[in-house]
Image (cartoon, rainbow, N blue to C red; front, side, top):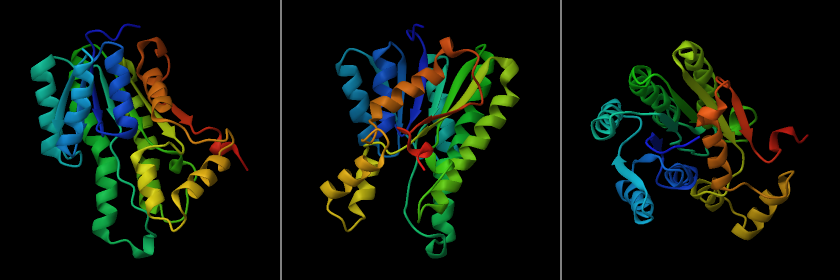
Length: 255
């Protein structure tokens, strides 16, 4: 399908998977809204895209803020007049056991990872319905299926995304709106690098262990996940909604 003339919002677009998703949609001709909490990161990605002769606009936002979410959607509609795809990718991932986590810490994970999906979906859906349809892709994680020590809040938020995706997909199936979720496994992103920094093991040794732990012998790349996100969003994929797409190099099938 052609993405020319289509408008795509991507949260967490300033780095990692979000950055790769922004570049991929822009390369295919879409107008991309790069949403990021740190304005400079979102602006840098938008500049990379526009310097290549493609279309992107950076918008700073705290995805857990109702006011910020409303502003992003309103400004997008004011500038482009439509929203065709919403990619909810922004997330935080603290590594802390539940007995050591404060209520504030728990709420920060849930609001940034899960409530943000609710907020953006709620705001873009009326515009999509009015436009005759659209696609929402929510980026969850394999932590929704199986997790590790110290990821209780993160796993809960990502599991919630899967269930929320299915519910929204059912609610809007007859209005030509498809809602799917992508579950990445270990992917080489700044978030993964941040996790490595918190370990006592040297980076090179940790990366070697992570690569060897994957059935495919390596962690994934952000571009590989971006391809799955684009597949989920594509109108060519017109009969899939409420689906869970696991892209983890075989991690969750390995006993």
